[in-house]
Image (cartoon, rainbow, N blue to C red):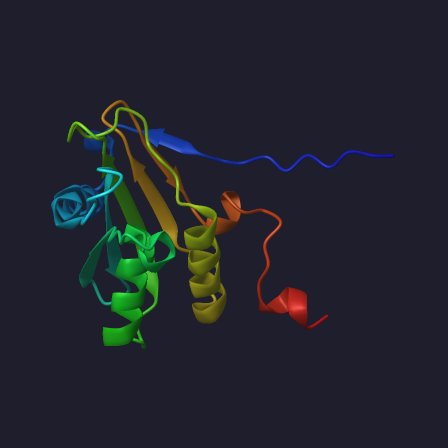
Length: 161
């Protein structure tokens, strides 16, 4: 038997250490938490995407009593962007969340498995990485690709050896 070590490279920033563009994107994600429909969990998530052409697209989680019918903030933003601007790759994804009391989370949350797979597919589709910014009031995590969060990834190259 042998072991394989798959390290994850996460940069940790304060808001002031980020570029103005990334700060604005995180603020858009924070603002987007107010658009969440979180009637059941009361956990509000906002996402903001920076497209290659400089446009920003936001999304927020949308819940439903039939839980599988809801949608995460990341995927609502991605699907909106892909529907409206299918020729524009996503350069950066920013995510922020509020707890059940309405406060921004102290520590960043990361995308669920379904959202990770969707972002991975976007990277594969456009052949470029998506920078991920995960907001917390104590720290902001930055990753340079979804492959950092999903190192054994399932993408098209896996299906066609």
